[in-house]
Length: 314
Image (cartoon, rainbow, N blue to C red; front, top):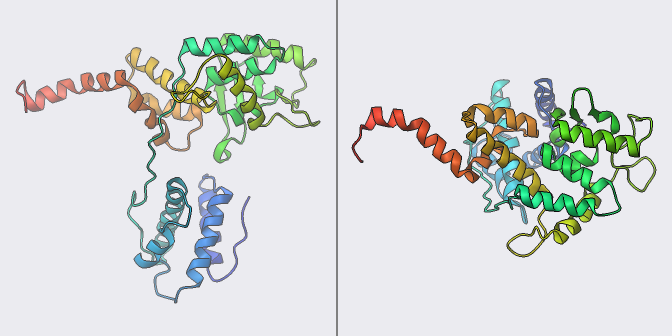
């Protein structure tokens, strides 16, 4: 969706959005709304030769009341990219330094072990409903987001290729996710039992209202009770978040890469694409949870360190 801009800066804002989209980048509606807010703010300021100078950039990037670090950082990225675009087309603009605004987070995900996940699935399979264990198996074996799983159709599951097509996911990105042979068998049996004839347009996890799929909130609420019953809890005694399963998948995959002797930094782009990350930095975040990755990096750098420093201690 493209927002219509009005006023003195409409051509510049609209031109920037079109430029990004023509390069293949997604311009979420939220980013376009921030651009429109930026235009409104610039309109209240006196005209100068530069559209955005340092003072204006700092005013635009300043924290709004009640704004989170993450939202402020996202606005700053849009501001900086817009300033780079202005310079590209010959319109003067101050470009704020990269990293000037950063979101700080102390959050540490709750990592789910294979044994804990087996316990969760065992509890789910003991219930009358057939869809919760299927959702859990998909999340654990593919690492896709709960919202992506909720929106899967029968046609998104390709038995022959053993893959799932995740359409228009976060940031409007689509991707193909391979599935294991065992998951493909379970999915095939689930589809055959729930959707006779295999209508490709039917939802894998239909909602109560005709033509709708189960929402991620409804799925999350149902799964939370299963986590509690399986006694897979946080340190505070609360059920884990469903998104922790995605974190656990990423970390387990990286751990396996290290054990296989692969260069983690070479394989990171593959995992990034697999998980649908918009930026490889989102995937690199998981490296800090891998003690084995730290050991492997030290071992890889050992010959260089020896050549530079020799055997002496610093």
